[in-house]
View (cartoon, rainbow over the protein chains, first blue to last red):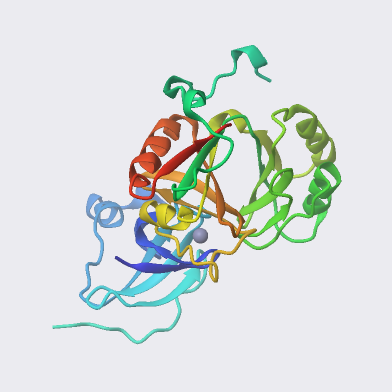
Length: 97
Length: 205
Ligand SMILES: [Zn+2]
């Protein structure tokens, strides 16, 4: 069970949150100009790193706000929490074999 | 506003009045009481000490709490609960929301804000008694220790599988819980069952 540090409510149990997938994926400005493969990449394909991931969470059973989390998928360590729209913080990449 | 003669508690089928008492029995650890017809007005608007905060203060007579989890006002009277950075509840023990709503709409005219009467969406109950915190801890992932959740604080969380808004009214301890009306039966039965090891008194509404 993760203990997630909501920027508004403080540390809360994972069961109060809903997951929003990988963060910082911008919607293409002109979807009609994309090939099917490029569109599929935007809609379906996500990184699945063994290491550092930046992802979105929403405090569904709390303040109901979205925010970003940088998390290590191996150790489950939450490295930092930052607001929607903010530049991703500069963190050393983590990759495990 | 719903006519009084049409209003029914969502727990009316349980016939709680037949075994309700005035206070907790000496050998019981927890007491449950339904509080079915409280006023809840959901307020949305910008945080901070701006026009929204002063409009709400004019209409309600209460200062707008700015920190999520903070409450202003009196537990038994009118209260403002800060539930999110731009979301508040204005609660009142009096079931007539209409006059409050009219005052709010007047004060908020022209602002990018909303005040909606959601009273009939909610059902409140109170948990008290020496083992009230133990009972609640079975249902809820919050840290309920008085050092992190003291009297006068509120939080939205889960009561088992039901979303709830929790406030701690005093350190006796006594908690007030709002769940959606359709979760009233679930919440009541869940707490009654989980409280069996402590002994549960039902207090009159
Ligand atoms: Zn939160």
